[in-house]
Length: 320
Image (cartoon, rainbow, N blue to C red; front, side):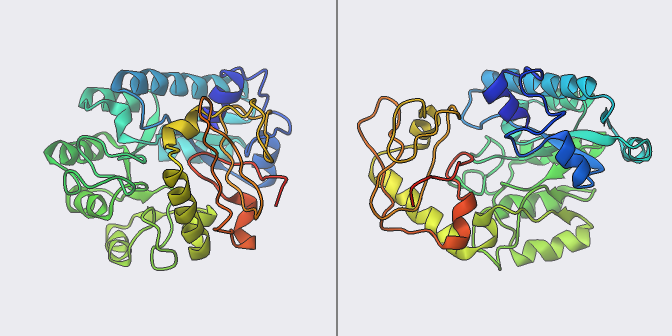
């Protein structure tokens, strides 16, 4: 939500007013309708940023979260502890916590980790899509064998200050390494079971067994790629088609749908990449490139189509 506010409104909550219905996935009416009592607002910045850029944008995200909570103080209140959550929920407001979604956001500094905690961050995901210098990601090439000495120190320091260790996005070796070190329950903020869907973003059975012993929590995510094998297989094939066409993740991030595209023009959403299932069309030419990508040979299962995503959230194509 906070990243969407950055992308679509420059953190201007009067422009993206969540007091009413919005085009985003989240707003106050739907939080109320859904009975949400407590919410971790994801403090996310891309793992492709430089260290300095990641730190600056993380602080901007936290600032935006505090501004949002203050603006909508009749509905939200910042929570820094379990006691705070219980008190805020009892008051009828949505207890609002913060979670940083990537170890790259601490810039290899325990001091930064502690300052994020001071600003209200209560979990840290050890990696995002890319490795950090001290931890392996599920979607990158192994580099340190799970956690190195500094990575283990990060886990110990998180235990000491009271920050939850989040193991979504990390490699299975990193999951085991963190469980070897931690003295507190860990979480998977958005992962599912690898035995059900064989995606590297999911949790293997041997880790789930250890998670039960750790008394930790795995919150299953609704992302189709993580709960349906057909959807995951289609995504892999689509990614291969993009790679063969010379389109990289960086190209996808720089794509500007304000440029005319066929048949999936989405001018209302800047910096969005749309993947699609079609037997006749190519879609979404990266900005500054003459290459279009077709995945016509890899038709998505019908039940996957409404929410397929590739690198960034998608809008559904009008052409099928």
